[in-house]
Image 1 (spheres, rainbow, N blue to C red):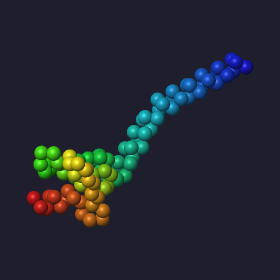
Image 2: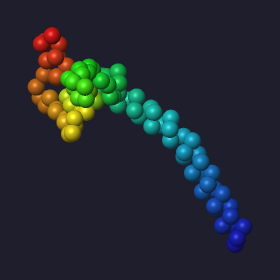
Image 3: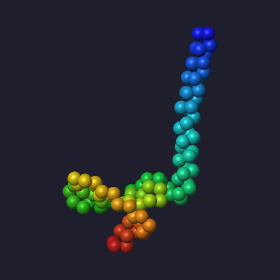
Image 4: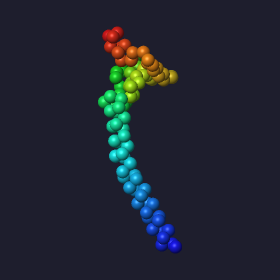
Length: 96
């Protein structure tokens, strides 16, 4: 009886090790498929940054197909989404 429970414990440990060993390549493959589905080279990227003053920085960040404007460095950080309007990066390029 003890021998059987030890064998069962060893089998569980081997199954867990195999799962840990094979889960990383599977997750990487799924991530690549998700990136290809949204037609983007990187799921998270910084399009541009502007230093407003000594402490504050304004950044345009894209994740997937969504583009956000992030103000950091002050007493409070802010995130603005572009929604259905043209992206922030295209507006910044038009102004400059």
